[in-house]
Length: 463
Image (tube, rainbow, N blue to C red; front, side):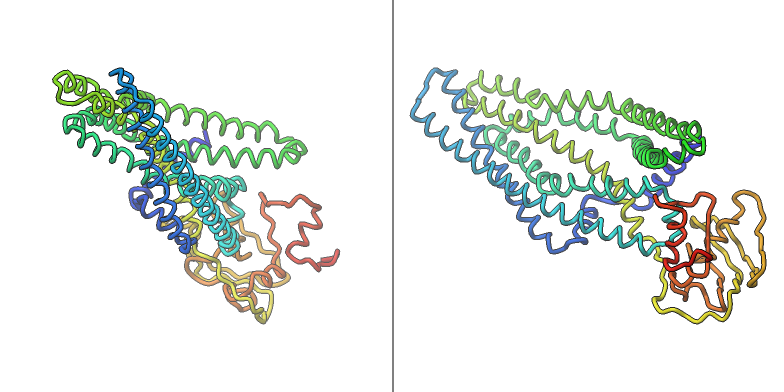
């Protein structure tokens, strides 16, 4: 299947790129704030608010342990319960306030950064070679600017401020368990080796399946946009069966790639969920033994059971953060790839053209590094003459035409028009003299006449 082969090639390149260009969460954070460095201080405030709010949660655990101890031992002091309960409610109200303030601040930061990234991408696409823009499906741009940039929101608005507080919670809980009794502190690590095993199984050789899923998702987005937007043209020219087959192939491959990824993860997820949900696997038997030996009292036993259980929501949030990072890694590479593309630099000042002659001198060109499409091409096209370029499919005929129209810059050699290097001719001036129509040309939703006049708005009917 054509789609499957194309995606496999994309996946192979993605894995090779990942090996050559390793990234880390700190690098991603640094890159994100390069779009809005003035917001970095505000994010630090958001993190501190979230951490302080998280630490206030522990008042409820102490209160729950106190009430449980009072009920079990049948020594209920309502006055103390009301006092401790009131203080706990006050602490939790403050915790909610701080968490909300942190979330509001981080979301505002997120929206500012995403806006800046989208603006940079839009500005960049105006300056990259036109050939790159026309050869890329419109669905790719939608996936890039809307979906991939949008996927960064969870990382900025939630993971950045909340992950430090989520990590702080189990650290504080473990410290408190060691303070209560070091054996309880050690017992809470019983499930950790099994959790690590689950992660090892989940992420072992997962790159290929993950990139296959991401690329198939991207391909499906592109096919949907193209198929829906072009349905009236497809019907008009009787291409519905062929176009629908491509769309169906994309859907089927997305389904199979999703299933393959989850098949690898099922066992690992089962292990992770089982042991992450069992934090008292060690503290329950150890705590009961210590209590039976009168080494710890009932309140300490209750803390030994409640504190590990309080880690569960934070453990899932930490796991979710890792999953979010895996998903944004590809988006990060896609966005950075576009933003670092070489630009098509052209002057604004028009130049004087001596004639309408085209001349190629030792021109070489490659779309991808190391794979030459044209090598050492030389020819001249004189005015008022007919010049045909004949060759097999994929031999570079369209590439020559695109170079003549200024869609790309040659990697080597020079291209002249009117005795001027095309690199020194403004794009708008070159477009006045060159009419380029491709076999797969993109048309705007208007008349053919209006499409033709885009290159030259004041063109007469005769022209």
